[in-house]
Amino acid sequence: MIKKLIVTTLGVGVLGGVLGATNLGSYVTTGCRQVSDSVEDSVPMTFQIDRARNMVRDLEPEIRHSMHVIAKEEVEVAELDKRLETATAKAEKDKSEIMRLQSDLSSGKNVFRYAGHSYSEGEVKEDLARRFNRYKTVDGTIESLQQMRDARQRNLDAAREKLTAMMGAQRQLQVDVENLEAKLKLVEVAEASSDFQFDDSKLARAKQLMVDIRTKLDVAAKLANADTTFQEEIPLDETEAEDVTTQVAEYFGLESESDDLKARSEAKIATASFAE
Image (cartoon, rainbow, N blue to C red):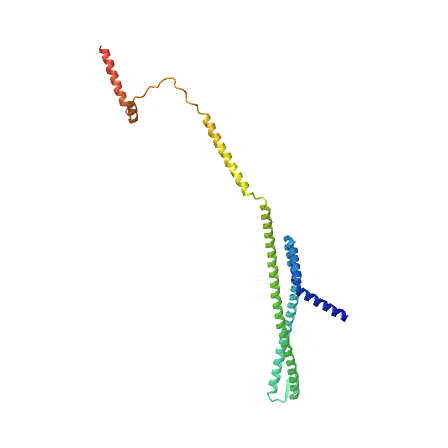
């Protein structure tokens, strides 16, 4: 057995020396790390989120156990409080009786009567000694109980704070998991919508095609309107040149005055013809 242990130790030492001398150890470590990273990267994100949710859910048994421990400790601390209260009340009564006996002995009497019975000074002193020793024992017990109660109360307060922190951390982790799940859904929606994006070049060609079609339609409409106008016909009769005075009269509004002059001249000609 010892020989196997020695051989194994030497083998490990030699292998470590070889790895360190040839830098093979760094290659092995790097390769293992890359394999681990690649495996982790290949795991779907939904699986990772479900894994995180399960880890958060696994905290519930520990929280329930902590709550049970705290509840039990609260009951025990309450019992200690009752014991301390009872012991303190009895100690106060014992102290008052001790002080009474002490006062009576200080009076210098030889015989003392209590509850219809007579007692000598020696008997009272013996009773006082017993009471005093019992009181010191009870007083020490009360002090120990008080220290125990204080220590358990501190532990109880620390456990409560730990439980509160754990429950708060669990709630925060639940919120974080929900946020991660919402982000994952947004990423999935964005990836799905990216498949429907148009190529910019195709979009530009489509817009140019619309412009070309609109231009051709405008040209066709103009040509259609042009076809509806008749060509000018060849004049068969000569047109008389318009008198320039008539044009001036029309432009300056003198047309009515020239008509009056013309009418007067025609009237004069007609009168002359009638006189002849």
